[in-house]
Length: 125
Image 1 (spheres, helix red, strand yellow):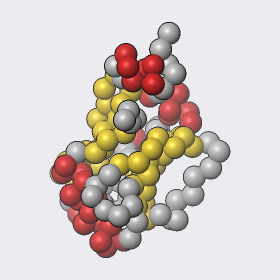
Image 2 (spheres, rainbow, N blue to C red):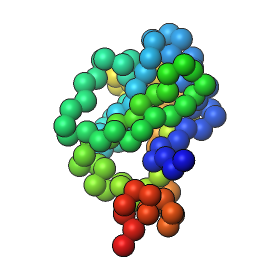
Image 3 (cartoon, rainbow, N blue to C red):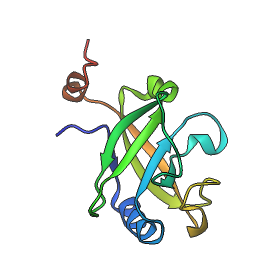
Image 4 (cartoon, rainbow, N blue to C red):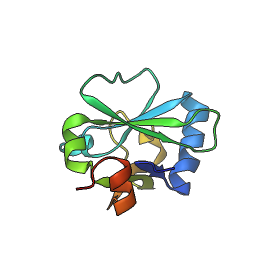
């Protein structure tokens, strides 16, 4: 199955820990500067998505419920030709993102979609 978003083992491990503390989680990538450039992780219900957001799909971290990932439509227009992987590195997490106190921060790694992925998402010319 072709997915737009994936997760590294390190990020999945931290997400399992954070889910144990905060309950079900979700991500939102808004774009822009400062904290808006980082994927923000929230307890489900603490950040409301709307018609200006694109549902990128889910990441499976080995829990009962996969974690849904959203991106602002404006940011998606720049990144629609890319596959995104949520990773984690040492550092200070974004202001309201739940990993903030852990000494780790989530980040997005990206690569261009290959020919079959472009075709799957209706982006092939």
